Length: 134
Image (cartoon, rainbow, N blue to C red; front, side, top):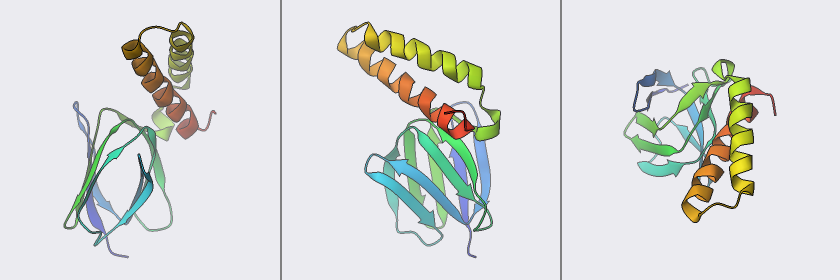
């Protein structure tokens, strides 16, 4: 199988830098699968599971927050505000974040606060889904 270079970065660190056979990410328009030789592409990604295959059969899953995926040549770059492997997710913390966001949403605050709480809820639910606890 043909590989491409994949780099996943956050403001704090390089999360992943290596070769991959396939990347599956969720954009606002739906899931996109990226293989070597993909046409140039840029899209916003939404909080969702990010699936990486290094061998074409097995996938490692990470919870990714919002960000951007860019394909250029044989290189794919994901820039995101936060990402963590499924096995590294602190489930108790994700549950607390989910509960706080739900409380804020039910408090019917202003538009800005509502949007922020809605985004925090999406991230918490994604982390719980990726961890296998939802």
